[in-house]
Image 1 (cartoon, rainbow, N blue to C red):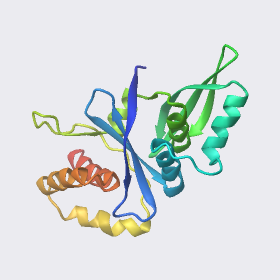
Image 2 (cartoon, rainbow, N blue to C red):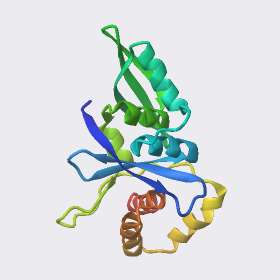
Image 3 (cartoon, rainbow, N blue to C red):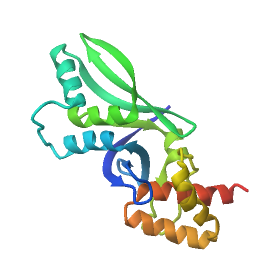
Length: 200
């Protein structure tokens, strides 16, 4: 399968879901975005590395990087390799003594390490097709991307129910508004509601 390179384009706090964030990966030289819901700790670990902050003591991912460096293990790339029931799975592709080693990882941890090592992030076309959001292109074409359903807490059910009273035009307009506000977690719920109606 062809790998597609991604880059971190945003870390977005959820307006609708307390203590949740979305790390937003953008297709390099493309319009698709891949939002992934992560927790606050994981968001902080990524933000610290993106902002090149130096904590007084190493955080968990800094410790991991130091450990890998001490044993001459190079993180070559991160691959978001699978998507099952709304959960992303990733692999760390490492080199050590001319040997390639694949290590399973939570996607949030893999991204935190990718930022620290400055290595590329990849995924596959089928994952981007099923879980991505296509931003409006300059010609104004809309997304044909299929949904992935993230786990939704009971607290969010009310917000999800509010979407059911809107028609498709209103949902599409709301989707563009929340994308402009960079509330990617809300955008996921709206996208899923739009796509569920189209598949009926």
